[in-house]
Image (cartoon, rainbow, N blue to C red):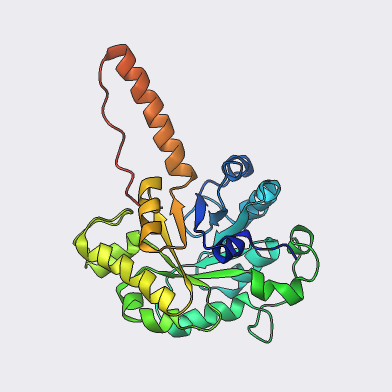
Length: 271
């Protein structure tokens, strides 16, 4: 079976740069995968796509050598196992709020005796090579998303879940929930209480010997999070990068023709 390059980076003491896909198109996925990300995940939860898009997007990214993954729609064994059988090397599961849910998630990721994943790697058998039944448990990375007040209250127990590789922080929902909607949801938080929460998460993960990942809106904030100890950071995604580049191009043209234009919209919002 092929090796998970993200795990290889961690073994060398290096953080991973993660890309995000929410546009259901193989060509967009292929373009993003060619840019040098260490890993890329398809957003099957909030993205404008479904499984019929996920499979060809995985195929389009294969040649890049990036570690391919997906955020599944929910804690659903069918979606998790289908993404794995399509060739995902990492799975991000949203709204994990309790250690029981974290353990359930892990069980869907792993083959027996460590879980209950059903054997049927339809595309994975071709994309990942032989011996999947013996090696997948060690190569697949499973991320539990912490993004609610309840999850923060159970953080220590979630991080202690046997077989869980790491916690992936969804800062938009986490801010909305943790701060009782005092602040709008969004990325790249600057509120002192949110900075403390983000740093608490990474400390807790490392205390339990697992990894921490943070979804960011900009590369600058992603690099800052690495400084806090995050092992993987997402530096925006296809839809926002496309919008930002298009807005910048339009603003440059308008400025050249008729003077300064209105600045592009704030990019801190949702996925």
